[in-house]
Length: 49
Image (tube, helix red, strand yellow):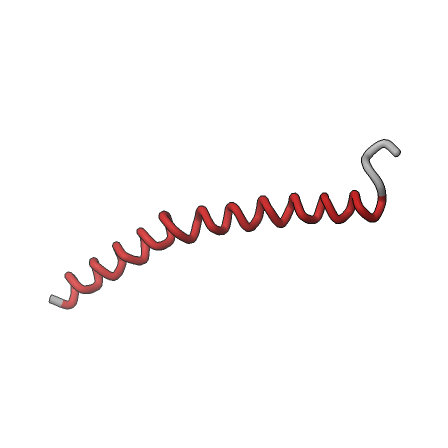
């Protein structure tokens, strides 16, 4: 019985990580990188200038 509960909890955690956490983390990282480039270009000007 305890092993069944463990397996269900593990499946829920896996689905949470793969369906929710990984895509959200990817969007946050990419948008944070783009935001940092945008801010740096506001402060230092466009590349090559």
